[in-house]
Image (cartoon, rainbow, N blue to C red):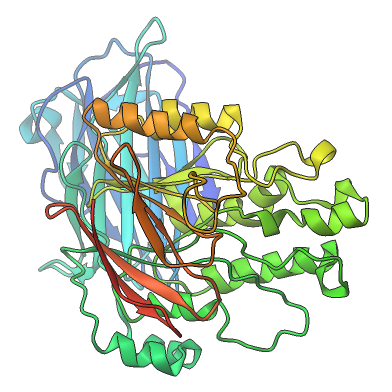
Length: 500
């Protein structure tokens, strides 16, 4: 028996890449109940069906407590690891006007009340998942819409598949809820991929890696480099930038980062024309993101605007501004980082959440100036960015790590001449965040080409990193011990340890 919200049935088919989201009722193999706690709507079970050519489908069954709603809405974020080792997220959204008082499992019809505390169920099927994928995550957020248009959400649920079948040969999922600990992304370190990527690692890096041990399940870890000043012009060194990406295949890193001055883009010489700077930025993004085995975080430095070339040649229109940086860089990072990344529209600043560790990394833009009239501010955070940082990015219960290019403090070593507009607004926002019980880890910078650190008058840790595309630091954060440990890679880069 089925019940309808409207007399006319609405079918939704949303196709993106190889994924199809379709609301339907069909026979699937039985699976265990995922959740039985009642609210307006919640996932109560899932069922798996083997399809053709190594594909499978997951039917999500949500319990609904009433027939008085207008319809159900679903958002399903599907993150799947492709053959290149990259995690790609597709967001599927739709509306379902039907609920059922009974559903089929195999050849048996069950009353919804037999398998849950709900009288009715709504159904959504995600098709086109591949058993060949080593990692798939479904993030399901159901909601109902009341007669007066109010949206009432159920629990957000995660189903995570790590490439293993259950006892009957069907893909096995781990289940987690948004208000509980989300299943951790298990980093797969493939020996064949390591053999391929080892060509990108400088000899000194390979030697250092032998002494570094990082636990995938216990340690929040990432690799950072800065001020790489990359140029595609006459460049034949394949280790440039690729070396940072290669680390993700040797260590279980949560992300890799570059805190700005990604490209050379500066003096008025032939190789720094806008066309070459544009090509350099595109190649840099490709090297960091292609075949990477983690998230990728990049931010805007003063070299990246190409402003000095433009000023010397009096061509302000050839600068790269926030929209350019979004189009060239941030939009690509959204593909790599998936649903854990949030931007302020099409801006050059954003944050990425790491739910298992409850850490939010905020990437700010310190060249957020008037590009047309002043050839870009060399050191500025706009009022709009400062307000977003205070009201949106810091609105979290996660621990917060902030990265940007230019240091906030003029007293920071080698930063005396770089007065940051709105630095006080950023620091005051962090102080208010901490005063309200927030956990702040540190500020991290590039720009001064030095390994330096200081604690400011507010008690906040500031850390800078040295330059060069073949130098980096691997960084671990121990929240329980409130300790940051770094491992230096490359010439004259030392290991460091800080309390925060």
